[in-house]
Image (cartoon, rainbow, N blue to C red; front, side, top):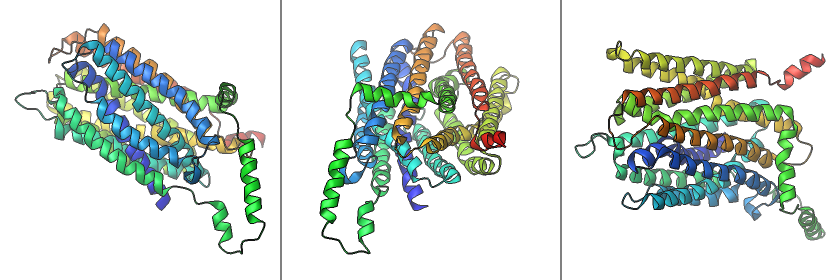
Length: 472
């Protein structure tokens, strides 16, 4: 249990920065920095595609090139934690006085570096979680524990929003204060550094050879045997070249079941991108919520997600993971329709609209709780099932994150272009009714379409027990 907690700490450090960027950067770059949605979408898309290719390379490197006593995972995680913490601060320091082209270059360079370190952490981290699991149910528990820490990391930026971006005389809309984002980046970087290092250091695997020597006397031939085994390992270590990278990358796509989970996971990620990229715009300009009200909405969403984790563990244990995942997606879809209802009748139900929004968002959190842990857990089950003595955990993990990042990059670009198409004007504190409706359509259509497609994709997945039933 202790190792699970230390492992989960890493996801908190990783998510606190990732969620800050996901929730606030599109709004910060367009509304605060005054950049067009298309430019921001292009920069985010390029960095995400870069991250996607990096996932594949990092997975291959992590599987085949250990960092001495730190092993194949933890050494990379330590370096990445330090890198993420530094670059995160630089990303939010873009001067408002420089030209648009220099803003774009600063933004793009920072995003590329941040995504590089994100990859260096996330891919080995995901592989480490699969390796720590002892069986089918233990894998769900590890992912659920990690998800709770991940969601705590998501909550923190929402709390910092109300602390550093309050409504003031200078900034009646607190979300438009550029200094507040800098202070948020300082706090999130310190959190990432602390929790990332704790996770990376306290989950370093113990040397197997050392443990076997404790209760036995070292033989005269031990050094010779160890030297021979190390030389053999060096000789059999694969070369890092394009052919080997492509071969390892395509392995996951050769299995239909892995492909199905990858596609479903990408679709759920796309839904999340629509929600995060447009959510702050939507609640600020379509509902005119203050930073305090938005913070309570985000906290309610995360509360539902965290509290639902034991529920999804229980359902997956007694009804298996696929039914639990489908139930979670359907719950999320229904709750989003609740948000649509509140928006459409926000004038008629003005006195209770915020309360109804809190209820709908909480239910959305409960449903989306399944999306954070179960798809990765199912993917891990398939990897473990396919293992034939060769450890490709990080390689397979890199493949799913690569596919997810490609989907996310395309979605970010689409969102940026859509903001320009609906004529979103960052210089206006009150947007036209057409822009408000456009923000609602982008959010609702994007999220619901992705979730409905994901539901159909996951429904076609056959778990191991289903395959055994067919054989019987």
